[in-house]
Amino acid sequence: MRRIALMLALAALVAATPAVPQTAPDRVVLVQAGQVLDRPGKPARGPGTIVIRDGRIVDVRNGLLDASVAEFAGAKVIDLRDKYVLPGLVDSHVHLTSDTGGVLAQLEQVQLTPAAKAFNALTNAQKTLSAGFTTVRNLGDRDGVTLALRDAIRDGQVVGPNIVDAGTSISTTSGHMDAALGFRDDLRDALDHHENLCDGADACRRAVRLQVARGVDVIKIATTGGVNSRIGAGLGQQMFDDEVRAIVDTARLYGKKVAVHAHGADGVKVALAAGVNSIEHGTTLDDECLELFRKSGAYYVPTLSTVNGYLERIAADPNAYSPAVRAKVDWRIRITGESLRKAVPKGVRIAFGTDAGVSKHGRNADEFELMVKHGMTPTQALEAATVNAADLLGLSADVGTLEPGKRADLIAVDGDPLADVTVLKRVPFVMKDGTVFKDERAGRGS
Image: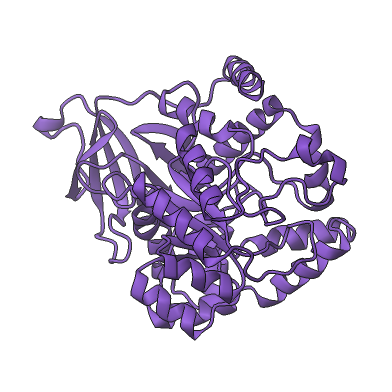
């Protein structure tokens, strides 16, 4: 019944979605840039022209070329000579179906239909794309909404960022992904989807296989408690070593990477020892964690922006969170950034991720400011949101840099992001797959 409801919801969503202001991709497009930052991590190369054909980059040339050049006769020219042009940004950790939190999120869980969540997901996806994030990794929703949205975007039915999706996140019973936490015991059967909760290695193998059967791109698990879990069980390890290994081995069998929600150092260590690909949050990393990161090559996704969401909700309503959750929220606000300060000088690989949904969608670039505040250079922060995030998501062949053969996913900003990352919070031009999604230049709508 859930599948039928979701299919009907998405059909209604596509039918009701208004046209998004954009232009169709031309066969050949010349994007003139005042500064081309084609390979984040390296300096900008100065004025240049990005040559695009059928939605893919075919060349990046020095100098400002136009249709007067014989080989480009008839090409469309986009004049961004007063802007920095760089690759479309990548957010490695979002939750598109909502950006509520606390008690309101708990109510939303039982009030919203899959249809309502589908509309939320599309709205939030387009806010994210408008903010310059052309690719995202969605790490968990309970109704398959973002899996369907991923496919609708790929098929051209609706417009949004490219989505790498984890389906429903996996944890143990009473773990961070147990949807029945905080509700009456007799509601457990109605609220739990069951297939995402595993107790014991065999059950955890089955949980992975069920997500693979749904068509997920990546597996998301929780080895520790969570800040927003409606239970006072702490933020330490809540999954046994053999359960984690069973999940990772099964995911690897099917060619899937594993992203791990983990706050406590013990839960980080058991995940890294099992060979996971990324640690999300990692709020209390110690020296042993940092050494395991170095040995394994796993990415750290700090998700610092969560504190913005917490602070804003508390300012609006001091009772936004239940007492058990509020204590963890206050701790997270106090300690955020400490692990990143330790990780950067140790050479831990960092990938950009916001946990948008806890923070507000469309304000993903706020994370850059926090990354720099807590120990990264602007160059490192931008590399984390392009080259590194693309590598983590397994998309380096398509996104992360502006090079021949890659998707024509690019943005333009006013000012140098390598000098001031806050310019990334205001993105006037967004192109995805060679199609202009947003253009705020004089005389043009967005």
